[in-house]
Image (cartoon, rainbow, N blue to C red):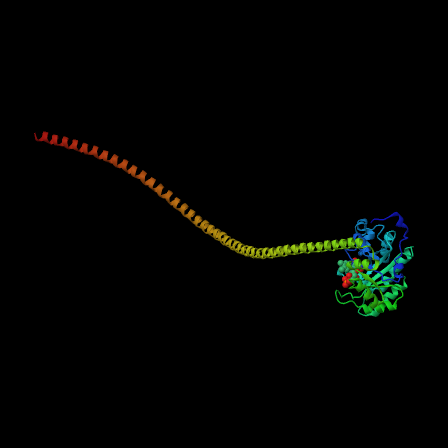
Length: 410
Ligand SMILES: Cc1cc2nc3c(=O)[nH]c(=O)nc-3n(C[C@H](O)[C@H](O)[C@H](O)COP(=O)(O)O)c2cc1C
């Protein structure tokens, strides 16, 4: 925020003087992103009588020095200047007004912004349905800002039922609002024709200045609207300021030519910026679409993979279950097998024991038989020997007998 010591006393040019000058007041309507210091400086060169800042959210402005520095910049030549706020609490609007009071000529409460975010936050056009809150906010600022020349204005849209708009305006007037800007469209309307007859009715019901707004693109438009409504006109197209400048002020041609070139430069720069931005947006969109398509493909393949994995998992589970079942069956079989084999082994062992016993018996018997055989053998050998001896003895006896007989014979 650029200030200046001389301006700190709030003794700036009273914008109300403009409305009492008897001339059509040329006002540059507030425009977010556009109505900054450089733009205001330019339009003032083209005969703009009164400038607004873009809408600033009062709560952020009060709370944050960073917001103040980025949202509000001004200089000595930037007058008369109205700072437009979005607000929904009287004290917050007051605090914001107090901050800008040393640098500006008035504040304006935005009761016309139809953007969804603003409406959802309780700012902008939803305030046209809260006349008491608007009255409170205006009254608070009026009471708390000492400088009576510091203007407090509101900018509204119209209701479907115009009586409600007139009621709102009258309540605002009663609390001391300096002027009211009427954008002659309802909250829902965007580019539909402006209801100038509604602005005229409002103007006829009020004593304070009413500024007509909407679809005023040339100085001729401004004059026509002025005649149609009897109101002062807000002009937002810059081109016509140069026309105004040339027709009304008839300043020297060179200066006008320079201004004209400057204006053309500004317009080309703006168009370039817009085209660049559109191109950038298009590229971003294209990239986004590509990425989304890729994402969709990836997601499709991911889904397919997931299905495959699920199938595989199911199959694996099945196999595992089958394996477990088989293992169980196997182990059961093993156990029974083991049981069977244990039983068989027992039987076999018994059999073996039996067989062993029998074998032992048999071998004992055999051993005994062997012994018996040996004994019998020995006996038979002894008998054989006895037989041989007896046979020899018999032969000898036979010989002796024969010899004895021989001798007898003799
Ligand atoms: C880019 C842009 C920004 C705007 N910003 C604001 C704003 O900050 N505050 C406000 O009260 N109105 C704002 N308006 C609305 C104008 O002040 C004005 O009411 C409107 O453009 C009039 O309708 P017209 O465009 O048909 O002439 C904006 C309009 C445009 C096109």
